[in-house]
Structure formats: C-alpha cells, structure tokens
Image (tube, rainbow, N blue to C red):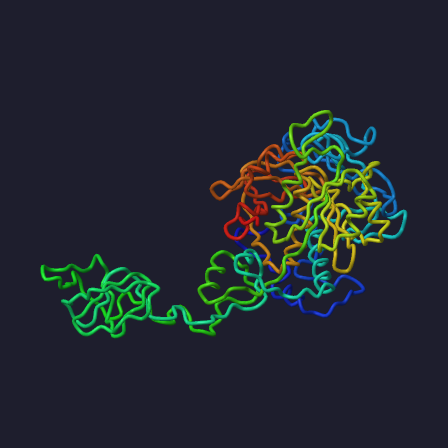
Length: 548
C-alpha cells in the first residue's frame, strides 16, 4: 500500500540518472540494463491497489464498471501471426465489429470499437495472440504461451526502454529561449549572473529619508528605472516609488501611510522609523555566482521568472522527446455528426495536447486509415523519438500494426498489458533510439495506454521527475477484473476519491470529468479501501496545466 504523500523511490528513474544519459557513450546492452529504480520485482505482482495483485473481490457487481473477463493468458501463435483478438471489452451498444463476426473493429469514439471486441457488460475475452514473456519480451517459439505484462511491470519496461534510447541517441542539451522553456528539465544548474537585487531598492511607495525627522521634502521624486539619484543630506526626504534606486546616504524608507506633511510642507513620521526600514539591500536574495536551482529542476513559470530576474535570456535544458501520431481507421470523421457507420475521431484532438502535457514535442498528426502500405511508410520514414499509433493492435483483417512491426524487424517489448481498459496496447523498439507505442482505438483504452507506456517513456526521455505516488480511500466499492488491474476515473472530494460511471473502453464522459485515475487491483476494492491514484496532467498544480 502506498500511503498518501509518500514517495516510492525504488519505482522510478532518478532525474540525475536520466540527465546523465545525455552525455553517455552509446551502447546497446545485450539485455536491458539491469534492475532500475522502476524495475519489476516479485513483490510487484502481490496484492494491493498500486501493484495490481490478485485479491478477493470486495465490491458487488456494478454495471457501470463492466463485468470481468477471464484470464487472457491462453495459447498464442508466433509474433505477428493472426490469432484471436486480445482486445478489451467494448460497450454493449458498440454495434457490430469490423472484419466479420467476432472480429475487432476500429472506432476511437463511442460506437464500434477498434481492437476491443465484445460487450462491456459481459462475455468472455479470447486468448491473447502473439508471444512473449511475462515481462513483455517476445518469445521466438511459435508455440509459446502469451502472457500479457503486469501493469506495473509494463511501466518499468517503458522506463528501461527510454534509458536505452537515451544512451543510443546521445542527445545533447539544448539552449532554449525562456518563452519556449516551460516544462523542460534544466540540464545545468541555474546560477545567478548578478546580485539580486542588483542595487539597493525601495520595497514600498513613500519617502526616502535621511537622519531623524521632520524632513524637508525635495521637489523631485525618485522613480523606478531612472539613474541613481543625488545623495540625501540629514533632514532631507525624497518621494520614492517601489523598486526605485535608493539615494545614497538614505536612512530608511517611510511608507506613504506612515507619514504626514505640515503646513510648511515638512514631513513628519506617525510611527517610529527603524534604520534600513523597507529597503531591499543589494544582494538580499542572492549574490552573483550563487546556485539558485540545481540540475534537474523542472522549468515552471516561477523558474522562468527567477531565471529572467537573474539575467538569463535562454536556459540549458533537456530537449523535448519528438513524437509523431498516426491515427488509423477508415471509419473516422474529422468533422460533423457521425453517420452511415462513420464516427468522429476522438483521439486526434485528444492525444496531441496530452502528449505535450507529458513533455513531448508533437511534430505531426497524420490520419492514415486502414492502409497497411501507408502505415508502414509512415512508421519507417519517421525520425521521431516515439511513434504513437491508434487502433489496429488486435488481430482483425485491417489490424496492421503487428504484421508491420514483424516485417520491419521491430523488437516487441510489451505485447498486451494486464490492465482494463486498454490491454491490447503494445511497445516496440523500432531502432536503438526509437520506439513505437501502439494504443487501442477506443478512447479510454487509449488513455490507459498513454498512462501505462507513453508517460514513463516520455518522462524518462525528458528527464522529468517522477510524480509523487499517493493513495486515498475510495468512497464506493469498485468491481474489479479477476486477473487484471483496472484504471477507473475518479473525482477527489474531501480526502477521498469518488469513482465515476461511464468508464467503458469507448467512453470519454467519465475521464472528461475526472481528477485522477484510481488503480484498482484484481478483485476490486471495497468502499473505504485505499487505492493508488494517478493524477491527470491538468488536474495537478504546477507544470501539468500547460499544453503548449
């Protein structure tokens, strides 16, 4: 169990370790580079909401959560060969699937589901196609039994893949203007280029005074941004604005509300004046050369402001991972109402801003349709760090992702994940420094794939700090899958989380209203039981709210 506010340091790659990869010599290890802070260990398969272990069901059936499917660990064929779909259960109203009875369909909006067959409220799930070990590494044996990767292990595989890619890419830090650095990770410490403030300044509007009062007030005042004013003599005062340079020999600044003038125009204090009062001395915040922020700091709006105040025009940062998005499906519309078996593309508008919130540079969004040749050309000609596809990850007649990966010699790292919705997701290594994340076509299933595979991979490539892990009690019981982790949209209310309905694989209504996703272990959770929560980027304070 992860307690609220606690950090699981053994789960995630450290920021400094990720930054160190920027300058490491490229090397392709014979195997993954050993256990990392996020590597799976035997305990990850145990019970508990954060690790997806099995446990008894504590909640009764709830139609809004969908009935559980049987285990998807049946016999499979060799990688890339057609076989039974391993798609999520789709909504009961999804309609017939494409490619014949029982075959997967392709919609990424409510309606016909792409690669996730069967009704969401019942029915069995056929065995997974393909091969692989429980940690996502494919087996070369044609008769090997496919075992989808446990959810926490899949996230660890994505982190390891990103570390390997960073080594191979030899990515150098980049110099970025301040207005383009939001959300980047500092690749060098932020060191003050000057004293802050760089001269003695007034902290308040009022008068700069010298010696004891009353004071004769100069005719000319002192404004911010002007040259250094003439020195004051004892018994003299000058009007001064906040941020203006303090005249030499000033004793204090008397606030406007703490002074009054008499009939002869002389200034009197209405309370005692302390030496140095309301003066910000030079170097009060820092001296030139002081380290203001360490390597690995995330560039938030206050960081950008501090950098500007300290004299910076650019920042040295880790470059954004580059992403190409390929939206698949002949049935997708880009405008208007669904009609004649066609549905609106929900993932084209959803994915780019979400990926940007994860720190990526989305270079292109291409709609390809069900064209294997066009998809293969798009994948093989991309030079992005990550290619993201939508749909086509199952085994129907127009599900082209697996066959294409086989033809181009890609290395399948994760082929299905023990998570609902979204378990037909995949992660493949295209080149030493390039990966592909195949998302299911149903919208909420695609979100699950983003969080499971794309988020840890992009976070590691961007050297971003891992989010703090925390857990809160669930207000209501949540029906669980007997073998798989479930990700359920929730809203946060008074130190607890309320599960939302409309959480089927093809539905976005629940996630659109959500603050977070609850990690529900196999067997479900009872009312009041704690579950790990995954914040959504726009629901957290700080950098996550930026989508540019």
